[in-house]
Every structure is written in structure tokens, then in C-alpha cells.
Image 1 (cartoon, helix red, strand yellow):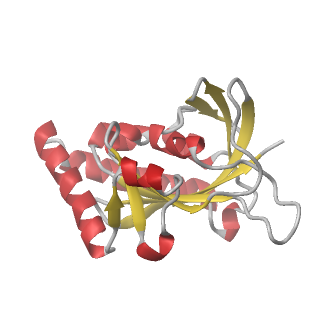
Image 2 (image 1 turned 45 degrees about the vertical axis):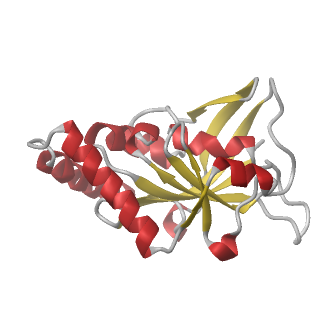
Length: 212
């Protein structure tokens, strides 16, 4: 019952945001999106690095310097908190991936959705991911998947797929191993369905664990 109430409240909040945007042009919404991203970067002292510097650093970001790499082609900013144990998804391979995440709406500066709470302890958002010559595609499982339950689609946000080129997928076998973790600033065009429709950016903290 609490889960249903949570989802209803979320939809009411998103509906309110949507109705407020009805009188705005797309250009005005995009301007607000850019401003929200810029504000987060300034307020959080984010150190934005280029893809060239990211490559020179061995495809790593320095968390102590709060580095995020900006991918010019899609507008996604990524910080690799942990590269993770295991190995990268191979070309031609399909694997189940289990995610814990927190989604923050940067336009309202509020947490919008998360399975990182005790109530959702049995909810790993599960997706099937395929690597085809370096292009990653994925779909959410319809069972025990909060993103699917709330947004009503199996489509995985494009921003969630960006890290797969750079992180490992594994299952810790000892206390010294950890799963991959990233932080992403995702513009609406690379976000979930509601973000795309109403044009707002999200900040994500996501862990990626190889499923079975």
C-alpha cells in the first residue's frame, strides 16, 4: 500500500510540474534545463573535463577533484566513482545488470525516485544489456523494477548506458571488491520518459552489478 501511495504522490508532483510547463515554449524549457545544470555545476564545484583529458587520464575521473567528463555528443556528464570489479561487457555479449539508483530532479532540486532505501531493499532495478560493436542497448525487466513501475516503459534512459564503455561488471567475491558506481548529470534528451516530455535534467547516483 505504501508503495502505491509513493508512486501516486510522485505522479501528482510530476503532473504539477507538467502543468506549470504548459505555457512555456520548448526553447524556454531548454533554457531552464541549461540553467539548472549550470547551477548544480557551480553550487557543487564540479570540475568539468574534456573527453580528450578523460582519455589521457586512462578513462578515469578524479573524485577528490570532483571531476565530471562532458560527452559533447549527448550532453551527459559522468563521474566514475568506482570502476568496479569484474570485466567490461564484451562485444556481442548480453548480460543482466542490477542497479541501485537515486534520481534527483535538478529543476526542483529534489529527490524524485530511489530504490536506495530499506523499503525497496528487495528492488534491484534489473535490465538486460547488449553490446553490439560498442553500441549498448537495454531494456528494463517488468518485475521488481521501480523505473518500470513509475514511468511505465521498459526503455532504459540513454544516460544510464553511457558508463558501460568504461566500467566493469562483476559480483564481489571478497570484501576488497566493489561493484561499479557512477554519478551522472543527464539532460532531458537522454533521460526517462517524463524528463523527455517536460524537459528537465536529472542527477543520478547508480551502481551496476552483474546479474544472473
